[in-house]
Structures are given as structure tokens and as C-alpha cells.
Length: 518
Ligand code: C2E
Ligand code: CA
Ligand code: CA
Image 1 (cartoon, rainbow, N blue to C red):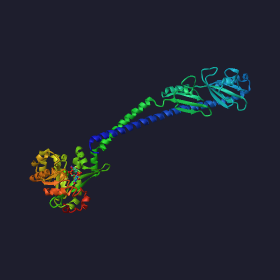
Image 2 (image 1 turned 60 degrees about the horizontal axis):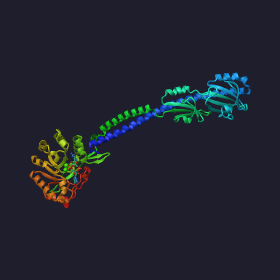
Image 3 (image 1 turned 90 degrees about the horizontal axis):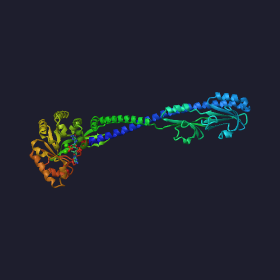
Image 4 (image 1 turned 135 degrees about the vertical axis):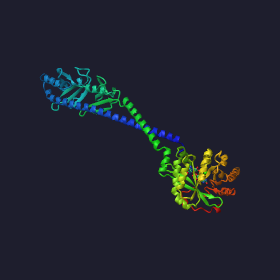
């Protein structure tokens, strides 16, 4: 999780990208949906207005035809002029025909006539009370489609009125021509239709696209069809643009928020603030009498989601994020918090080993920090041992001054992980240091690798010559402990004696009789 900040950057970029992409899709999708709703409302309004106009018109024609029914009992010459004037005053009526015994005998347009209805309008069903067909034209206007509307007389047998009506789609075709997404409208009866696509009568299957909306006129076989593009290019373009802009903003905002709130470095500060760090104490045993002489303090992080994070992971990370100083100061606070109880568990003069990172050691305020930490502890009870790894000795002139200052104020310094570095050995004689902590790699090898034991022997001899006290780390077996004691080690630390313990565990700890073990 905290391995590298660059992996965090990659995660941040990926998360922001995904969030941005989702936001873009959402915004673009919503915009398209709203636009579709708007279009749909427009289509609904248009068809509703056509619908209400047609319904009104048909009911007018029905009423007029009704009032013409009595004329069918007269001869044509008696009623022709009235028929003509009624047709003239009825909007969009081309002609009224009076029908008797299946023959049209009188026309408002041409007067007296005699023509079989089945020849005139083969599709109409005279047996029905009313019927309607679409006609390709009428004798006067053969190329202009019309609606043929049949009304059987309810009272007089075998008689009725037949009306031919103009179909005027002009206002609607004008309207639709101004709406780029609307491609046309059609009025259909059966599978025949009059439409804005062509002047003549067509079949519905001749229209290349399916209608987007249809509505049926009650009490009539008429259906209205609206044709339009489902997806308009400009709507898609606008939605894409809006989506891209919104997505980009959300993506950037996500990156900003993540960077400022979830940045791993920030997690350490949050961890400090939320008290997620705690300390454990590992006893250090005197090799001679096998009594506890002190503890090494080790930091732990109980992360709310990642669980226990090992110091080997978060310490280098805190160093890389320049957060090792606040973290170490927090460690000092945690120890100070435990100190009153710790004082009861450890004898006066007990050593308190604290790990110091090089980033802190070189800071100007380092000495002040150590002094303040010391003041926060019970006076003169603990001996502070600052553990500094061998790898940090390279800037030795600078370090030498620091060590001298520390030692002159009574603090002890230990070289940690001795044997893991390469070049420090030659500088050792230039420092005066108190302890040498032999890395557990050496201790591990005792008894398994005959070659390393002489090296360890030599290291112990060197430490003796330099007047340094030696601490063996990672002592896990009685054999190792025996070997170390026989070779003059001063202190030992490791799982053989005790794992690192929390303060509560330490308080409850009953050290076994180490003499019996060794
Ligand atoms: P270190 O200073 O060498 O600490 C000793 C490490 O060895 C500890 O690991 C301890 O738990 C482990 N250990 C002790 N006895 C045995 C044993 O018998 N066998 C084995 N296999 N391991 C044993 P831990 O606590 O995981 O710490 C790892 C490292 O993290 C430390 O190595 C130290 O370099 C660093 N660290 C821990 N706490 C702090 C801190 O407060 N500040 C700084 N700067 N570094 C810290
Ligand atoms: Ca250490
Ligand atoms: Ca060590």
C-alpha cells in the first residue's frame, strides 16, 4: 500500500480517469435523455393538435352529412342547389353525393348523375353505418388524394350520403419542415396513406423509416403517423461535448480531492491524528545475570483498512514523504504517555532504546527534540539509548559532532544493524560510541555456518577493543544465546527472551527463569 508513491500516483490517475469517464457518460446520457424527452413532448403536442383538429373536423362533417340525409328522398334537381351550397360552406369538402340503392344520383359538384357506388368507390362498404376510404383522386381533382366518407341513412333504407374531403396537410408540413429532426407526417387508413413525403397516395410500407409516434382517431379508421430522426447528430455532439467537459471537471476534482485527502503521506498524518500508532517494548537481557536491563521501543501502525502495517514498510515511506520527524515526535509522545507505568515495570537506570532515522538525526532541532523528550519522562529514571543504523554513519564528520553533543549530555548512542552496512567499519574508530547492536543476520548464522562465527568473534573482539558494549539482536535459540555468552556478548535481545510487547502485555509478563533455559 505504501510501497511507492508512484504507484499511488498511478492509482490516483486511474481512479480519477474512471470517475471522470463515469461522470462523462452520466452527464452525456442525461443530456441525451432530457433532449429526447423534450423532442417527445414536441411530437406529442404536434400529434395532439392534429388529432383534435381532425376529430372536430370529422364530427362537423358527420353533422352536416346527417342533416343532408333527408335530401336523399328527393330528386336531384329539387335539391342540387342546396347540396351545392352546403358543400361550398363546409370546409374542405370536395363534394357531397346523394346515394340511393347503391347508386350515386346527385352530386354537389356536377348535379344529376347515375353511377354505381361500387364503380365509383369500390372499397367502400355501403352496408356499414359509416365507412371511410382513401381515394387517389376524385373526377374533378384526379391527382389529389381525398378521403371518401360514407354515411348510411339511419332512417331511410338503402340511402345515404357520401362525402369526399380534401386532405390538407399543408400547415403540418410547413411546421415539420421547420423542425429539422421531423421528417414527415402521414394520415393512414388501412395500409394506404397520404403523407408529406409525396403528393399522391402511397402505402405505409413505402415510407423508408418506421414512425416515431402514432395516434388513432376515435370512431374512425384514421391513424396519424409522425416520422422523425430518433438521434439527431447535433444532440449527440452536444451531449458528447457536455459529457466530456463535465467528465474532465469531475476527473480533475477527483484527482485534487484524492491528492489532498488520500495521499499516503497524509495517511501518516491522519494516523497520528487518529491515534492509530502505538508502541511495543522488547526486553533487552544482560548476558551475565540474565536480568532485564532495558527495552527497545518499536513503533506499530494499526491502520483502519490495511490492518497492521510493519515498520519496515511505513518508516521508509515516512522518510520519503519527509514525515519521519513528526512521526518520531509522535513516538516520543506515545512513550511519554506510557512512561509512568513503564517506570514501575523497569528498575532505575533501565535503558530505553529508541530508533532514530537519519533524516531526523541531521535536522537542526534534533538535539532540542531529544532534550524535550527526555524532559517528558520521569526524571533520572531511564537512560535513553539512541539507535542509529550503520548505514547512516557515512556523513561521519557531521554525525560525529552530533554523537559527541548527545554523549556530553548523558545520552547513549548505539550502532544498529551492525554488519549490514559496508563502509562504516573503518569509521568506527573515529567515533566514541556506547553500544554495537549486532544484526540478527550474524546471530542467525551461529551454529549453521561455521565460517561466520569467526567473523562474529572478530566483531566482538573489535567492539571490546573500542570499549563498546555489544548487544546481539534476534536471538531465537538457546544455542545462539550460549554461544554469544561464551564469546563475551554483553546484552541479548530476541524472541527467545520475549517478543515485542504492548505496555499491557509487558505489565502482565512474568519472565521465565532464563538460567534454566541456558
Ligand atoms: P530494528 O531496529 O533492527 O528492530 C528490531 C526488529 O527485529 C524489530 O522488528 C523486532 O520485532 C525484530 N525482532 C526482535 N527480535 C527478533 C527475533 O528474535 N527474531 C526476528 N526474526 N526478529 C526479531 P520490527 O519491529 O518489525 O521493526 C523493524 C525495523 O523498523 C526496526 O529494525 C527499525 O529499523 C524500524 N523501526 C521500528 N520502530 C521504529 C521507530 O520507532 N523509529 C524508527 N526510525 N525506526 C523504527
Ligand atoms: Ca533498533
Ligand atoms: Ca537492529
